[in-house]
Length: 212
Image (cartoon, rainbow, N blue to C red):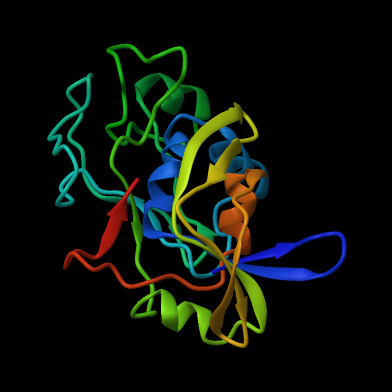
């Protein structure tokens, strides 16, 4: 469930599980790292329901034992309960950061990429809701989106996305689907959406999270 605030009044938006895969551009965007550095580790940067990690051994991802510089890769919590916990480094970025920083095993090329270190196995931990119906239950008035398509990055640094709904968009009233709605185009920041997230569905494949 994502809390949307329009010009007239607030709306709750329920999006499908594959919405998570649309955020995979977070891996390549420096915005989250820059926000974390500016705010400082230990500071809340997104919603408390967000737990994001780089997990190289997570089922469903491409396992990686070492990075391009031969540094061993280990699970690294990046955001815990919405609070910035760590940032990734290669040897070059660790040297620039100073303060005893070391490579976390996220080099794309030996010596460091011009784009910097990148988490390649991002995993978002699921929440407590059993399904979409449970997510909709407390919503007085909102929108249920069954599918998104043609999601593209408009501004990488700000992680601004645009896309369309498809194959079913519905009005939610008093916790239930009340009427169909026309498909719409949206433009919003992935980071703002993470900050506005209020609830997440349980992962249905038996894993602990969803790979971005």
